[in-house]
Each structure stands twice: as C-alpha cells, then as structure tokens.
Amino acid sequence: MLPMILAAISILKKYNADGFLINTSDYHDNEYIGPSDEILKEVTKFTGSNGIALITEKRGFIYTDSRYFLQIQKEIDTDYFDVIKDTKDFYKAIKNTCKSILLDKRYFSKDQFDKLSEKLENVNIKFEKSVVDEIWNKRPLKLFQPVIDLEKIMISEYVDKIMLETVGSSQAFIKKDTNVTGSRRENKVNEVLNEIGDDILILTALDEIAWMLNLRGNDIPYNPVFYSYLMLSKDRKILFTGTQVDLKDFVIKDYTDFEDEISYISNKNVRVSPTCNSFIYDLLVSNGNKVSKFDLIDQKKSQKNEVEVFGFKCAHIYDAIALTKLFDQIDNHLKSNPSSEITEQDVGNELISHKNNFKAFVSPSFETISAFGENGAIVHHRGGLTKVDTNNLLLIDSGSQYYFGTTDVTRTLCFGNPTAEQKTDFTTVLKGQIDTMTAVINKNYASSHLDILTRAPIWKLEIDYGHSTGHGVGHFLNVHESPPVIGNSGKVLEENMIFSVEPGIYRENKYGIRIEDLVVVLKKSADYFFLENLTLAPLQMKLIDKDLLDKRHKDYINMFNKRCFNILSAFIKEGDLGYNFLLENTKPI
Image 1: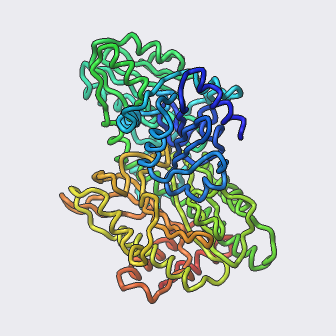
Image 2: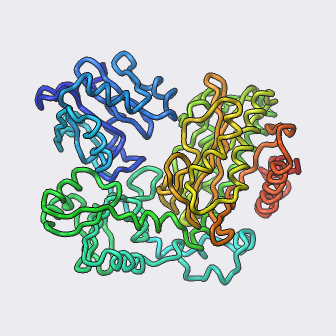
Image 3: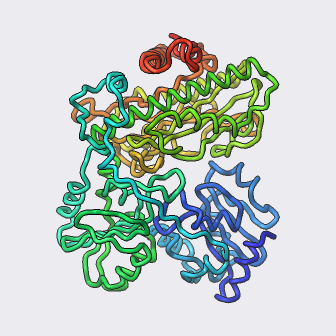
C-alpha cells in the first residue's frame, strides 16, 4: 500500500472518522491546480484533472469521468482502489462503508458541498482545515510569481502589418496605444460597483480576478492566473495576494489575511463568485450576512470584445504556422528515416520549439496531448516514449497562451496509409464538426442543440464519445472557461463567445480520432447566430473518404482549405518547412 494512503488511513482514528474524502481542486475551485494542492495525485497517483476519492482503512474508491477511464487503470493501485464510473455509485459506496467522513470544505465549492450533503444525508461530514497538512508532510509551498499588467502590453508590439492585413483588420482598428485586452480595469471595476450598489463583492475565482484587473500571473502551470482574492465595495477595494502589485486606489494585503478579513463582515449583503468554496460561503452566512452568487463577471468575460477577437485570430495564425511546420517535419522525417525513434514526447517538444520562435508566445495552455496508436483512445494521454511510425494514427491536442489570445486545437494524422476503418471514422467525426460549423443558431435555444448536431453522424455508427462537444476558452486565460459548454448544460450562447467544437471516435486498443477547432459566435440577424471558425491548422486530406461526403460537406472543406492556404502562405513560403504539407492538404476535394 502506498505511503500516502497509509498516512491518510492513520488520521481516521484521530478524528473518529470512517473515511477521508479528497478531490482534484483547490481553494478557488480551479480545474487545473498547482503542486501545493495536488493531494489526490499524491495519495492515489491519478494525474487526471477531475477525480474524487474516498480513503478507508480496508478499501478505497475513486471516481473520474469517461475521459480518464483508461488512464486511471494504469496509474492507481487497483489492489486497493475500486474505480467508480458513475457518481451515484460513488455516493452509494460512501454510504455503504462510512458513518462519518473527514474532509476540508475549502476544496469543495458551495454547490459541490451542498450536493454531497444531500446525497450523504445520513453520513456525518466532519470538517478539519489541517487535515491535508497532517498527511502531506512534504507539501510544497504555494508559488507567488510576478504579475503581468496587460494594460502595459500593446498589440502593436507583437502584431506586424502582414498580420493585420492577413486577419483583415485595418490599421485604424489597432491603434498604437491599444493594449491586448482592449479595455481598462477602471471601467470594469466601476461597472461592477454600479451593479452591486451598497453590497460587498468577494471574488474567489482566479480567472475572474485576473480578467477584472487586466492582470495575469504564472502561479498555476498553463493558466495565467495568480493566487488572490478580491473584495470590492463602494468604500474600499482590497486585493489579497502573495506577490507585489501596484494598483491605483487598491489596498494590497497578504493572501493569508483573507479569511481573517472576511470574518469581520457581518449583517451585510454579500455577493460571491459562483464557484466560491463552501468554507468561505458558510463563514459569511454564520456572521449574519445575506450571501448570493454573482455571475455578471463570468458572462462579461465570456463575451469577447473586438480587440480580444482580433487577438484570438492572430493567435490561431501563429499556432497554425507551428503545427503545419511540425506536421511537415514529422512527415519528412519518417519518409527518410522509417525506422527512427521519434516518440510522442519528441513530437510535443518539437511543437513547443516551433512556438518559441514567436515573440508573443508565453506558454502552452495545457500539457500537449501527443498520442500514437492505441494511446489516442486515452482522451487525455500524456505523451511518453511510445514510438511514432507510419503504421497508425497520431493524435495531437495542443494549445498556446499568447499575450493576445489562447488556443486549443486537435488534429489527427497518418504518416502512412490509413485503413478503410480509420478513414470512415475520421470522415464521420469531420462531418459532425462541419454540421455544427455551418449551423444557423436560434439565440433562444441552448447550446445542447449543437451537441446533438455534432454527435448525430457518430451515433449512426452506434458509438459515442464521453467528453463534452465543446468548452469556452479564455482570453490569455484558462483554456476551459465557463459559461459556454457544448453539452447537456442548458447554457444559451451569446454574441462573441468563443468555444471549441471537438467531436471524436475512440477505438480502445486501436486508435483515437479527434478534430478540434475554436469558433466565435457572430450575429446573423436579430434572433440568429452563426459560427466563424478561428482555427487554421490544415486537415490531412488522405484521411477523408470523399464518398461519405455530400456537397455541403465538400463545399465547407474546400472553403476551409482555401482560407488556410491563403492565410498561411503569407507566412510559409515555397521552400520553407511546412509548405509541402500546406500545399498538399489544402487542395480542393
């Protein structure tokens, strides 16, 4: 049994509890978390971004979603843990084994904790703030890195005339003093203060704080946020953080002072982030405050302004250049060195090498998923030492953080001769994506309609994929952003929201196929929207079975190919690395 499991078991007697509940989260309910909060990974060895585990003396139970069903079996101790694939079964396992459980409420949002309490109505839930520290003796300290002020970063520093002309924006649109956000924090703060009136607003979501203040950080890998809390009212503005920040009209206090500060708030109307953790929420309520959730910032953040949309377009050009060069590089390498030892890891490293040539590139927006052959069926596979050759498919899911935008793109490739099954699957996935890309959307209908539209061709093969069809993307922020989710969320789309469309087919022990592009929602008329594709990385034409396409699919592919070539050929010239792949894979179908 792993030492950290034994450590977790050892504290159960101290607190007279039957089980210890841990999850993949932090005090801010981040999806991606820093090393100091990776308690689930430390105890279970599971590295996925979504999991919850129950530790008991004799047996452990761990739940994750379908993206990680294959991965989790390879990472955890299956002699101790049972993998639970449904939340109902996970709650049942807790009730069947525990009369009392131990947890830290700061790792659960108010909604999550309330749902947990409802499902475990006869289980005594005990809260201890020190419990994680007690079992994790070598817990890393939180990192507080320098903060970037985006109001001091001008688009003109990073975008040249060729890029402006290629994107289709006039010189007048981007002025010399236009910062990469196209906004001022003073205006954002004043708008929020006008909205809350005499109330107090407490922001705990890191991306909300970063967006509101036009600041970015580097405290959590791949996510340009910084550990902080923000308190706003008509009387005072306080930022709690562990790094040096100079903000006019703001009081800066240490990150660790936050809980003490809010303990003095009583008998007020307090608004909080929708993902506020249960400890903070309940502390405010216990002091007689009337607490409610404030979702205006999420909504504003998800609807990009014209400068942000422009930045996204520039970011996708840079990403497409890097990916096209990478695809050409791999293809050339395998043709001349068919027995070479290029690995999944090498592919990811080479991609970063290409992106590092761009001045505005900051970091990946998540760890590159480079998955060859059967590894492609593991939705979030971590690129390893598996050799890439010409005998199967390579799935590359990658993203970037640029000062002016964030990307997330997936392409599936074959550097040999694809099988008939692979071509059928690839074409089916592509058809589902095209059906959504070309849809006219009634603004009053939920995004779940697009989910059905995308999955329908795949359902005809009597298969499905377990992940959502799409997710929102932040502007030089988190690559997964709420509220737009293309799935069963019931969310309604709004103009200038940016989200992914990423259907897939996963054949266990064989291969995985996913195609992912980002789109922006644009107004067609008063009540209808359409989608503009931002992604420009070429599709590999030899994976498409033309006989499975109707005219509208072919028309879309030809339009997409023409656009890719016209834009990318301004940056990748004949004779350059990438040109052959670009030319070969943007021809009319």
